[in-house]
Length: 355
Ligand code: AMP
Ligand code: MG
Image 1 (cartoon, rainbow, N blue to C red):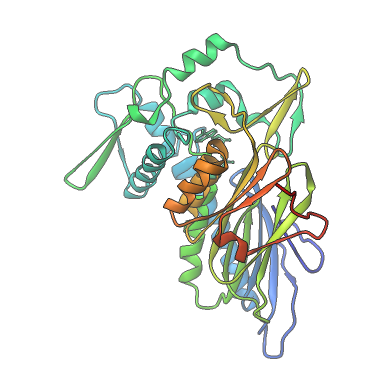
Image 2 (cartoon, rainbow, N blue to C red):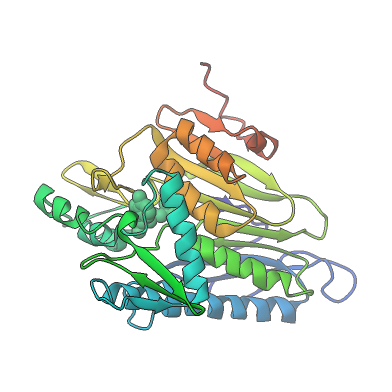
């Protein structure tokens, strides 16, 4: 996924005026770029410069806090770390209302995807060392785990084994011994939801497009009211795009693809989306899925779930959530939900493949 920028890129949270206007800063946009949540964060903001700069600083702080205090499985300061450390204990772990709501959404998606989407795969994702694989692919000394190790890890996976109890306003979560949460499939979506809330509170930002490592949040409008344009990466050539989405107002665009994060070893490519039924990178007809939703958390979860389910079951699941979906298949076909057709324009060199 790529944003179409006018003008040159700027790095490390420096701002560039990308538009022009009459009154002070009116109609101008400001571009920022930085790293956060282990990925590149880019933002184009339509606002007076001081408001844009403040918003971007606040956003980076918010993302840092989200990682540090809630989502990271590595940092001892995070809620996920504490939940994982409590696995097997009788008292479980008290969690915040935000975390309870995230886990409830994840458990619901687990059920509705018939177990394809599962945030309890931490033992497997660590076994496969997914966090060490480079975005955009890498090679190295990677050795795929043995079947025995995979089978062992699979025994401590499965959202059906989680228990949540709420009493006197406090929610506790109980994980069986050895289970590890991995919220990697929804982290960017949660961030999109939080940034969307923050944007709605800031009257000075009239338009914004924010990319979190390819997950895109759009908001408001540009000065000239032309739509936001979001490119859809071609899985066969990630430097190219199969088409663009034209969006107005607030949307969350989430993509899951086998070309996003992977490692090659012994001539085999291993990607980062695991099939819970095999404990291995999913094998199927899908190379990428893009989901369009109003809110980020379901959208991010759905892109992962739909990648695993394939176009038929995936389309039905997306529809059940009121989401639009675009599937890029391994034979080069592009399959769109009916509603997605209104937003998607194919690149001129990507004519539909006849049936
Ligand atoms: P995404 O790129 O949003 O599709 O999320 C992929 C990430 O979610 C991986 O890097 C893993 O951390 C985690 N993950 C892998 N397989 C699954 C799965 N079947 N269900 C939920 N999370 C998964
Ligand atoms: Mg996802």
